[in-house]
Image (cartoon, rainbow, N blue to C red):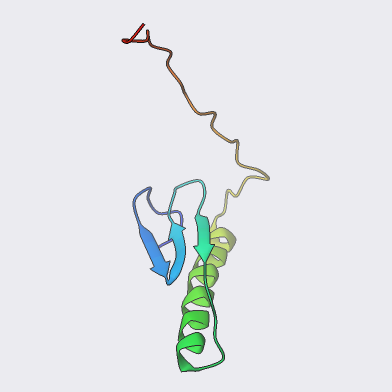
Length: 82
């Protein structure tokens, strides 16, 4: 996954999900890093995802101070059951 490249890509490590977006990358869920080879593998996967996001941000020549949050657009409709 290339962070900030599109609004479609998603990557998971265990129950932790990283969803791509052009203005934000969302990370949510849970990740258990155990003291074994499997835990090391999960920790390295997480580090690679975060390192990629940091690299993309550092490489952006026009990085703004803050992204304007887009308000959720809602449209009111008549209740069909009223």
